[in-house]
Length: 488
Ligand code: BG6
Image (cartoon, rainbow, N blue to C red):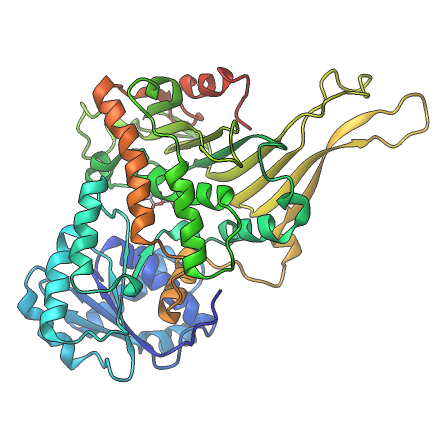
C-alpha cells in the first residue's frame, strides 16, 4: 500500500496559526520526526496572515506540543524538529502575496505539498495565488479536509476551484478516520481471513451496528458546529467511510483505483432517505445538560456563544439499507453523537441465529455470534461465542464467552500511530489510497443531502437527550421497531 518512493518535501501549511494546525498537524509531524519517519531535509513552512517571524512561530509550535502532545516533549527531537520550521506572513485572501513562496520553496529538489488547513472560502485565493506565482509543478500536491462543502453543490464548487489548478491525482482529500489503524484493519479482517470472508453477506449476517460516540461537546466551536450539525460533521464522512470499508466488495488489489472504485459502488447503492421514510429511518437529537463521568456539563443551547433557538442536531442515528446482492435485507444501523457517556467507536457485526437449538437447558434462545471491532479507544477485536462450561455433572451447560484480541496486548512492540500521522506520511509519500476521490465525496453528499432535505421538508426537530446518555429514546425505538437493540 505504501510502496511509493519517499522524497524530501516542502510541506506548506496554509492556516498555520489555526486550530487544526496547532492541535493536529504540528503534533503529528513532531511524532513522525520522533520515529524517524520524516526525510532528513523535509521542511515545514507555516503560512498565515498573522504578523510574526520564524521565532514566534517556533514558539507557538512548542506551545502546541505542550498543550496537545499528551506526553513529555523530547528536547533533542524538538531541537531537530524545530529546525525544519519556517514562517511566511501572507494575507491568504490576496493572491499577489504568494510570490513570497518563490523565495522559500524549492520545487526543483523537493515535492511541494500544500496543506490547506483553512476554511474552504479561502481555497480560491490560495489556488489563484499558487498558480500565479509559478511555484507549482506537476509533482506538487494539495491536501484538504472536511468540510468539503455542506452539500453536493457546495462540494462541487470547492472541487472545481481546486481542479482549476491541481489535477485529480494531485489532490489528497483527508478523512482522518482512514488513517486509524483499526479502520485499515477492516481490510485485513475481511480480505485476509477466509472464515470471515465466506460469512460476510446476507446469508450469515443479521445486521451491523456502527457507533461513534464522543463524550466531548462542541469544544468552543459553536459557530462551525451549529452551521454543520452531526450529520454533516461526522456521518457524511467518518461513518460513511467506515461503512464503505465494511460493505465494499473485495478490491482487485490495494491500489487507490481499486479501492476507490469499490467504495463508490457502495455509496451509490445506499437507499435514499425520503420525506416519507425519514422519520422511521432516522433520529435527530440535541443534548441537554447532564453529567458525564461525574462532572456536570451544559446543554447544547447553553454552550458558549449559543443561539438558544438552534435546532442543529448533535446526535444522529440512521438505518441504512444497501441495495445490492451481498447486503439485501441486512440493515446497518449507525449512530453518532456528542456528549455520550464515553468515547467509543465500535462496529458490531451480528450474525444470524442458528436454525435449531439443542441447548435449551442453557438458553431458550441461543445468542447469535457477534464480531465486535473496537476502533477506539482500546483497539481490538472480540468474537462472542458459546462454549461449554467445564464440568462432568449432568447436562452440557453453555456460556457466552469472548475471544478477545487486544491490539495493545498482541502488538505490544508496535506503536499505534494516530490517523493524522499516517495520512500526513502517506501524503508526503505520494500514496493516494487512503484519501478520498472527488466522486466518493460527491456520492456521499448525494445520500446525506437526501436526509437533510427530508428533515427540512418535514420540519423534523431534534429530540432532546440528556448529556451522558446514548441519545434520545427514539434511537432505541429505531432498532426496537425491527426487533433489535443497540449493543451497550
Ligand atoms: C472531527 C469532527 O472530524 O472528528 C469533530 O469535526 C470530532 O467534531 C472529531 O470531534 C472526532 O475525531 P476522533 O478521531 O477524536 O474520533
